[in-house]
Each structure stands twice: as C-alpha cells, then as structure tokens.
Image (tube, rainbow, N blue to C red; front, top):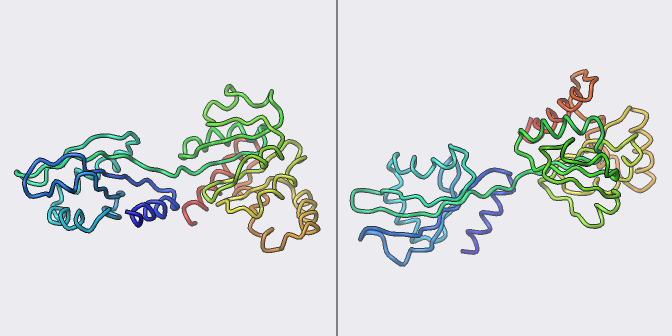
Length: 258
C-alpha cells in the first residue's frame, strides 16, 4: 500500500488529474470479499497502479473488455471533479461498486502586485485551471470586485508573505509590483525556489539594475537566466490586457513543454 501512495504523489507532480477508485461493494461469487477496501489509480489513459497484486489479478480478468474501460474512464473524460459511487458491471454475474474520487494537484499562480496588468492576467488565468493568489501591500487594491476570479487575496508586505509561505514546485510566479519598487525583493526571495515559472516585468534597464543587485548578493548567471525577464512572449503587446495575454501565453507554453 505504501508504494501505491508513492505512485499517487509521483503522478500528481505532473499536475494532471487522476482518480482513486476504492472497492466498496461486491455482487458476485468470483471476486474475493477480502478485496473490499482495496484501491487503484487511473487517468484518461487507463490504470496506473493497484494497491495489491491480488486486486490487479482479479481486475485484469475483465479489463480487456472495452465497455468496462469506458465505464471506468467516464469521470475523467467528462472532467468531473466530484466524488461519486459507481457500479461497474464486469459480466452478467459480477458487479463491483467503487467510490471514485478525482485527485488533482492544481497549479498555483501567484501574482505579486495588484496593478493594472494583474486584473486581466487573473481573469485570463482563471480560465486555465489555476488556483490564483494575488499579493500586494495595498489593501484598497485587493478586493474581489477587482479580482472576482481569484482564489486568495493577501494584503501583506511581501516579506511577510515569504515569512509565512513556501513556494512549491507547481507554482507559477509573476512579479509585477507597483512601479517595480519591490521586484528585486520578491525575486531575491523566489529565485532559488523550485517554482515552475518565475517571470518579472520591466525594461532592459530596469531588469539589468535588479540583476546587478542580485549578482552582488551572490546569485549566479545560471540562476538569473532561468527568470523570464522581460516577462511574456513577444507579441508586441502594449495595453495591460495585451501584456497579460503575452504572460499567460508564456506560462501555457512552458507548462505544455513548448
């Protein structure tokens, strides 16, 4: 069972949806009753891992049937997010009941700065299956009227955020603090994190000034080169909305391996 949960964690690192299926009912004489409570993982491509060899052996007797695969994979294909009880008819004599629960490690977008670019960026990225956090030290800029699709609004000094929060591998970080005042401070705190994406807005001159300070702090050229600065794909965007599109596009490209 320990290997089963290790496999679940490993699959979640890819930020994809998997479903756990727990055997909760057996109607038939061919499946041993002691398999109740056993589990398996699957995604849209099929079975990933069984919790025991016995369950795998029993299920493999029936899994070649395409209609059984279809019954199992329906929650994935329909992109359901709620848990459900589901009966799977193996054949005319054997029916199993499974408790199916989707498990997702949803990527988190953290936007440092709640200014004019943040608004359209949050709106766009809310359509891309991100959990979205906006951090800014100005309470009057952080409200759900401006950011109705954000999951979390944190009115904090940036240093307070880093004192109480940990950047994770599945985080995508956008640094667009007001007037670039805190970009250096934020980047210094995240540049050695395991975040999937770190992007910072700014002109070449402003980026050079930030990088020069970071070099003085001991950060390497390799570390600096991994920051997306200037942020976003070059689509010649000028308006806040166009810049937001460029940032979102860059995040999508990185996330999908392009």
